[in-house]
Length: 277
Image 1 (tube, rainbow, N blue to C red):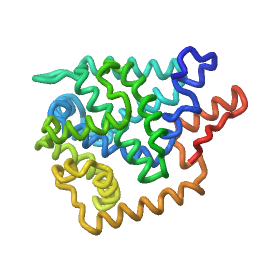
Image 2: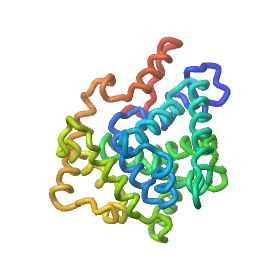
Image 3: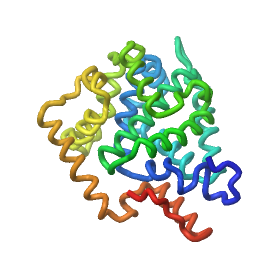
């Protein structure tokens, strides 16, 4: 973490970090629905979302709000990043109910793990190769955010392979179990009822989400995964990385990332990371 950096615009991490290199990709944001469904699969998280969010009125609000704040932490100036951290922590302190609290470190750990899992999986599926070392560097960066959001450093698995084991154990041991609330909320996320958009328009999102989810959760949500869905997902995995190679950064990179790179160029010569896919 670029703590104490003289250049305020470098933020908490800076352009050489793995977290900039992964989270700048718009294609990685397509994995957000996977993370959301994984979060819903934890009964206590589902209860908190059901009781405290507007998911039925504005189905995109949870994903959009989460994405905006997380991108501010990653790509914003130090002041903007720390403001986003405070905003999240203040909001979390208000979310509590029968048997759950958004400040519970175990729930925060589950939510954090879903975000890491979905970002790494989406990058590998939709952007390009990501070595085990690069993926672990990404995870180490995200741990710094998790600590700021209230997760004790001691409960993080040391490396990404340990996080994968944690995810598998949570599902296998039944702590994560898709319930009726989760299924109802997932349906709203995957098939939002926008008046001018036909339901078929959201079919690609459902296929991508099904392809990225861990198989037990995909089955628990009842998402189709026949040869049509598998073929469509495989086609995306082939076509999208090839398309991104020739896509201008003004389209390929998310707006907060583009603004962050532009701010650095105004302050000093740009230093592009060696990892450039």
